[in-house]
Amino acid sequence: MDFLTELNYKKLLDACFNVHKALGPGLLESSYELCLAYELQKSGLQVATQVPMPITYEEIKFDAGYRIDLLVEDSIVVELKAVEEFHPVHLAQIMTYMKLSGNRLGLLVNFNVQLLKNGIKRVII
Image 1 (cartoon, helix red, strand yellow):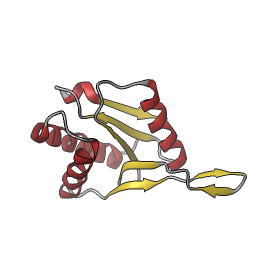
Image 2 (cartoon, rainbow, N blue to C red):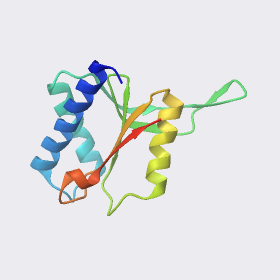
Image 3 (cartoon, one colour):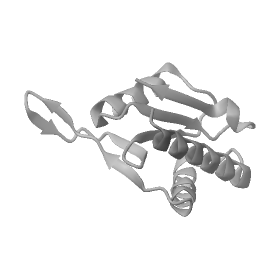
Image 4 (cartoon, one colour):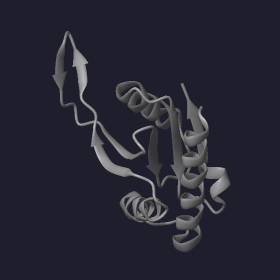
């Protein structure tokens, strides 16, 4: 990872902690998404929400309904959860989004935890 990507990743983590500190666990994923997008924009980062990810099969693109929760600086895929605990399907989901988007760095965040450090998983492919 280059220095700029690492700096953006740190800003992303800080924003996640700020949102969790303000809201705590127990809300819907969509609430965290809105607040995190706002916090990231406030910190000067470019963020896109609900980014469609088509799949390509035999040179035909299909809209299969895949959507990245947040794409930060066109380089970091962020998948948000508000669940009891991570399951293997959550890791598979973010890895699929990373593969489809061509991005190698991802962050899987579960806001439904008492301590956010227990709800963060960095993913690199």
